[in-house]
Length: 166
Ligand SMILES: [Zn+2]
Image (cartoon, protein in one colour):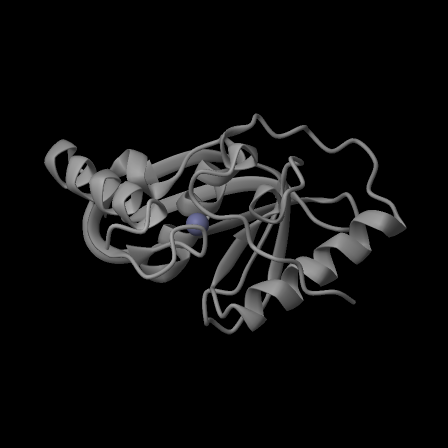
């Protein structure tokens, strides 16, 4: 078991295309466990592999529901519905929270660690986490979904912070 450092805004790996996983082997099981441990230590409710520098299509999450921690391999959004504004943050943009409007409900098709096709679907925190983690696997960051004016201000703040101006 290992806790990985989490890559933050500006690290190019967060913008890379992630590779579809074809072998669900022992190494992938270990990676999933390490990702889980890293997520809980952060603490966070979701983590995509590229956030720890591994550009492969796997993410873990725990939406504080009765289903507990889950792994999704090669996940794809197959349905979204509704719209809701919710406060959202990201382990790769630490210290920032924004009210972000997204679909309220998401349905995702993925593989589990046995290579079986599974579905994750829900609204509330689960719907939000599913969309957020899949954005990561597509090279996205929550900054991309901010309204234009908010994004401009956020990017300036992040740049100033990186330059030690704030
Ligand atoms: Zn994130």
